[in-house]
Image 1 (cartoon, helix red, strand yellow):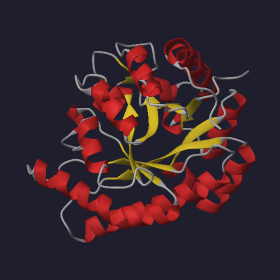
Image 2 (image 1 turned 120 degrees about the vertical axis):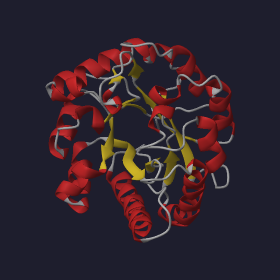
Image 3 (image 1 turned 90 degrees about the vertical axis):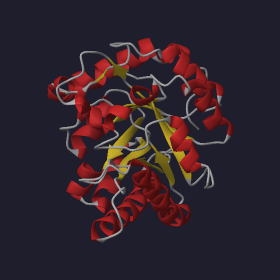
Image 4 (image 1 turned 120 degrees about the horizontal axis):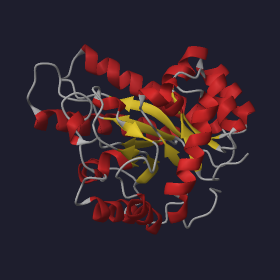
Length: 292
């Protein structure tokens, strides 16, 4: 069995799989790449995780996730910044352990409004401050920080960065190799400016990763769990994927899904279903070859 050579299984899609199982079912499903999450890696320890990852033969597409640094200066903010530095180091270690073509990309979700605050402008300014503080460490580690804008419905609790344009405005203060953006179809499909902003991201070398999943209604009771397999909703993968491809992006494309029904399914079934969905909804719009 083989999956599309650019398809990567983001580990969130098989959330309950421990690291060993996630690596095994992804490789057995014919995938060449995986996006790892910090919690399963930390459960076995970084060095052991890197060894097991190297043995899997898979390459790293991204490492998820850092960020959540919108709080005012104080102990909690210092702890968050320090944790992000550790995440950068973990990303570098895992990318070095992965197969050829691994990318040291550390995905950042900004964080929402601090408890009791309505100061959205201030929260966004603290995201910029955190990037300035973390960028030198990322540069020295050879890691790209990938700012992920989230749909506006998450602005209060998860990400005050809501559009690709906002993410690019934050990123453009830095070297593209150090700070880029995550383009996730679930979060950006609605934006009337998304296509020109994708072109802008490509022109400035800022696309660190492209993630795909679908949007469908009704929204789940927990809005976090409303993602679907590509092709099971309303997102126009043809236009979005063509726009990303037109920039010259030719690396892995992750399927990242938060959906309780999918999480509860057997992991091999999810891996196989995701490969079929990607082949039908995304692959026909790709023109680039296997990552080098």
